[in-house]
Amino acid sequence: MNKINSILIILSTSLILGLTGCSIYMAGTKEGVSVEEISESGTRSDVIYKDDLEIVKTKRGENGNVIHEDYFALKPKGSIARAVLHGLFDFTTLGLWEIVGTPIEQHLGKVVYIPIRIYYDENENVNRIEYLQYD
Image (cartoon, rainbow, N blue to C red):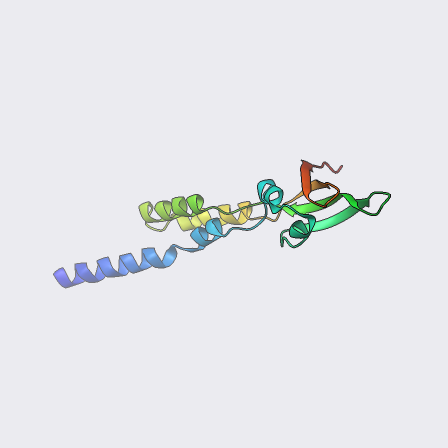
């Protein structure tokens, strides 16, 4: 009887550990770029090389310098704290959280772009950033 209990415990533990992971991975995967990260970039060339920005339009002054550019910025998603919570929920619900957590993360993981405008000074340093509204 003792041997059967040990086998059941090992199988249960393996099953729980095997089921956890998908929603945890999805919750912890960081993508996107925040306005704070863009502000810290400093120069226009730093902004252009960010992976999660798509340039839409550039406005230049009379002397050819860039006044501002419009971008679609991939909205930031993913967080270590959310991944830890998913792990705790997985553990406390014996893996049943995966049934709920994975669809939730799929919904939260949808790609969302935020329209922004970045203004530059005469040396092409980031001056300010504003959110745009497209109708």
